[in-house]
Amino acid sequence: METYLDRIIKITQIENVTIGALERKIGASKGVLSRAIQNKTDIQTKWMISIIENYPHISAEWLLTGEGEMLKSDSEVAPTSKETELEMIERLSKEAAEWKFKYEELKKGHAQDGKDAGCAGAAV
Image 1 (tube, rainbow, N blue to C red):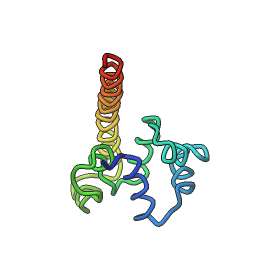
Image 2: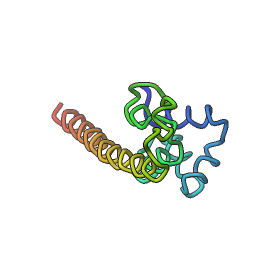
Image 3: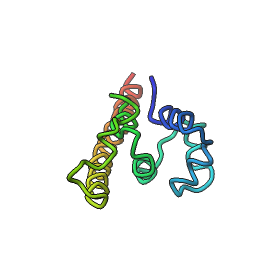
Image 4: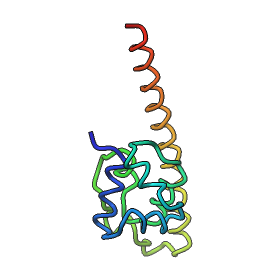
């Protein structure tokens, strides 16, 4: 099953950057993403939000869930004819906040699944 960490690797491939370059672009310390990928561990929400903010052409839904297309259509990224750049930034920021909430909910569900599996294993 593909994880969001696998999808982060795909972003580096499509953007033709290294994991280190991606870490620098999103403001993460060296090794934050590479260690998570290597160890298959979660990363902080702020790094997912930063990826979404720094790569507005990447679909947040795809990054978080694997559903939909990786790349947004041009109309989703560019300001509409009636929308100023500031309004577009505000809209994208609002979308990022909504995806942050969804990401946190997914993490909670993932953590709960792990607890349930641990409890089931202990009962055997």
